[in-house]
Length: 455
Ligand code: F0G
View: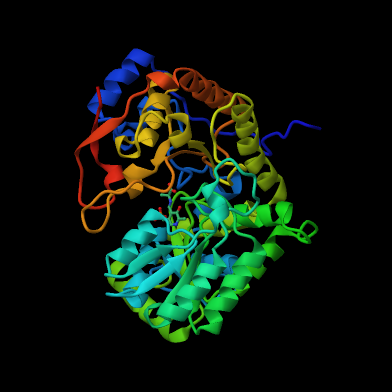
């Protein structure tokens, strides 16, 4: 069969409230043209994030009832720890309430003034947690990623030559090397197994630990199976285990590739580092067998981890993005190619060349998609990355709009509706205007900044 169907049936539904274009225009004014400030009930299709918005399975809901809320030594923790270790063979697994809590604990231990932490691309919370300690977060993404329109299969790869030079020149300032799989900020693009192993080997040759931000590990493993020579016959869980076996630790948001609505973890092999991490955990999150979560959340994650590596699910998951992308490419809409694991990325810089980077073409496009069809996406460009630690402003590498797909939530007709909305905005792209910032906070401005359209 050519049609790849959702490999699930729907048992429980949530209504979508329909709104008119006129209504949405008023909503945008009241939200200061920041889509984070719009109420969920005013959104028709919410593609702001794929984080914490998955539909849980019947088995996950059943697992919630098994949750053991004991303060210490909960049996839910045992099931959670075993599920993580089945895929990621780390010695210590430390639960946290979400991914950034794991980052905050890790970088409180490894960061500090003058340190350098290289990665393919740090996600914004990772970068912020590193910079909050006075350290510098460096992105060493391979040059292939600079060409949104090329179909290079592993645009999440680290530039190993630059990493090697950096380790040789600044090794004493580098506590660890990181990789984000898939590379969220760069288009949901995967890193190859060969690249991950090469980076691990380089880090280890310089006595540095290698840490993986594994938020979307299953999608990355699926791409390895699909795209990397020699990997096609392997089971996804085997690829996952090989990825993590070459790392010394990982940070994880269970809100992505664990089908959970909340949760995360920090995993480490080093006993001393793990002990210090657990001490910080007790200060900020909770006892090491619950780490800021309810026991039932740990059970939902444990069950989710067994479902996320299912190949029927992963095939459907990636196929939806490919389908949307194929239709956009056919209509000449500039996009990041190939399709990402968790999202479709529109190239707002290429679509709106008349809007300069610091008039925020990505934000302008995201606002237009909401006004046109009530579709909420997220700018990943100069609004998110433009403000520099020294207070200055600099254009981001790319001006993108991310349409992130919640896991198991929307159907094929929702995907068609999203395509129709994008095509309608693309038709009138020349009439779109840039925006200016009216007010913004000191850090992570994209969440709360207020904008006004330029006339
Ligand atoms: N790392 C990556 C690659 C992420 O995408 C995120 C979150 C985090 C870390 C932090 O995890 O939200 O559980 O604290 N990304 C979400 C997104 C917010 O929309 O992409 P968290």
